[in-house]
Image 1: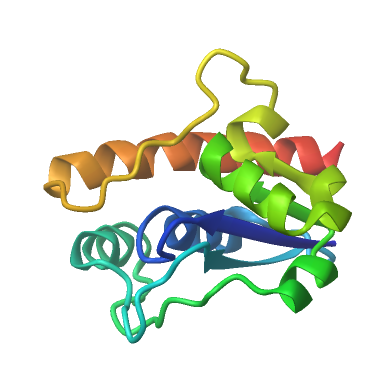
Image 2: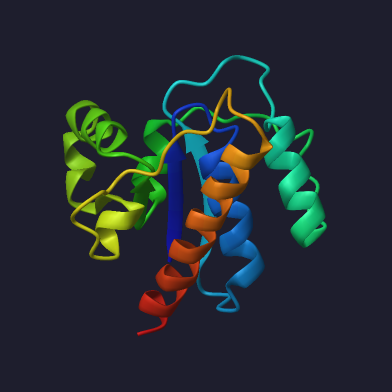
Length: 148
C-alpha cells in the first residue's frame, strides 16, 4: 500500500506526517511519501519542522526539498491524506478520477467536527510543536487502523 500525505507547501505538516509514519510504521507493505499542493520552488523543510524532527527522532529533514504534487504520484497512491478539506477539494476538482481515495487525515480516522490540521507556517516553535503533537497522535491512530 502506498500512502501520500499532502499539505500546502510540503515544508511543515506533510513532512511531519511522512517522517512520523516512517518512524512508527513497522509494516513493510505500507510506504508513504509527501508532497505539496502549491510549493515554492527550491523550498526546503521549515527550520522548526527540521528542529523538532531532529530533536525527537534524530531524523534530518533540513535539506529535504519540497515536492509538487503531480498526476503520477496521485495515480500511484492507494490512499491520499490531506491536511485540510480545502486541499482535499482542490485535488478532487483537479483530479476527479482520484476523488474516491482522497480524504483529510482526520476525516479518514473518523473526525467530523474539525477535519483540518492547522498550518504552523510563519508561527513560532510552540505552534510547530502543537501541530507535531496533533499529527503524531493521528499518525499513531492511522497505523492502528491500517493494521486492522
